[in-house]
Length: 203
Image (cartoon, rainbow, N blue to C red; front, side, top):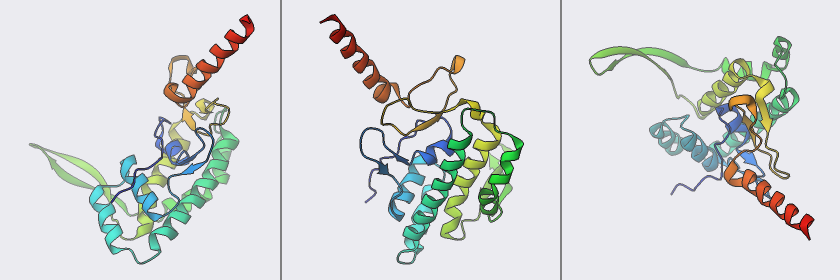
């Protein structure tokens, strides 16, 4: 049975959603990829890996193999979180490449390729990959991280202003005025806190 993932997909950037797979939205930190099953569930909900590939990987995995892969993913996440938090809030300079060797080494192991497929009465090019080993499940994550550093304006990468929230997001709003991971959670709590303060000031 698939367990529900506590991950939150609120970042508007898949590379940041990966970092948000561990988060403290309220009080206690929650890690969506604390083990192999958690990693498979997170990948399924993110849409990064086809469902049939995840089933095949689960069925073929040796004991402990997926847990070791999850540990590798957590290590990758910790490293990338340090990089993002160091550079967020400002334009990412080309010199940042010097600190991305970990990501480039992972990308170099990818077995992605393009092929021609039928699309109704027409033909189109489809990008896919060989899912030859459990490590290949990390490749879509690596792609999302690479897309973040090459296509996202890091000056608009922000941390939620919730006092205990650790979620990150890319601010794509008009005027780049976004402050919260979600108005339904941290934004609403902030409004309630402000309301209570106003009531106090009247007494």
